[in-house]
Length: 327
Image (cartoon, one colour):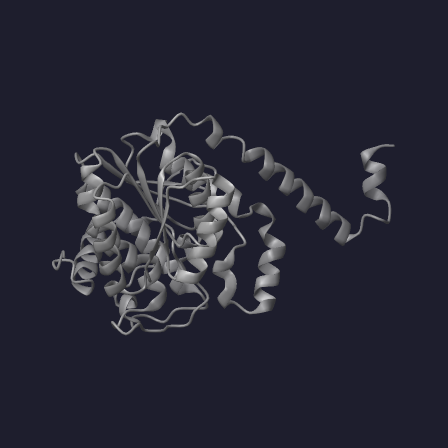
């Protein structure tokens, strides 16, 4: 029976065609996921320390679980103690690792980040890997008690402060990596520093998330320049279209539509690009780059490559986070 006969029969209505396309795309993703396999990675993690923010669910949890399998000292940086404990127990059971530690931190709170950093540096004075994964989306403009926008604080300002507070520990490790989890949505954003405090030009639905990820891309390039020669590299990577708990703030209809479209990846598959940036030997010494969900270097948006904008954004972020107060 010919393929043309099958496709031309009445049973192949719009629904059937859509289902076939979905199944073919799922198959292609499964094949793609084996292009870089952690099991074939020879990077030695014994005795090293890794920190992942937003580790209690989604991509962050999957990244943490895979790293724990490799024998790394794994720090799960989570906002909720209860949910963090649940994630720790699940990761410990799956990895059989006894080198897991839970750290409580609200990445939207600069005070919480400072407290977490102080605790972390006492426990682990050397850090070999920092994955800035925590993010929120689907929220309207909402200010924190410190006067920062919640979405921008969680996805950009918090990672900015945390990474800077841990710079000493990263440099003491001798060779360390910072991985900023990006998003394809950064292409839809623009840079307005006033957004950091919940003001600035108007934003459309969820554009605050898009803009925050663009700021993170700008930060990646600027930080890489500042850390040249220290042994610390900084790159950002896009996990792709992943249906995860970050969607919880959207309406059920929006989540349902997104679920229909998110046949591309689950959280474990979305973790692959992040793990690639964290571990791949061929990336030794590579810094300030942006990687697509297929682990390929891509050009950052034009706004993120503007050196004057990056410098101004850094200065504003340093002022808002009291970066000079490096306690």
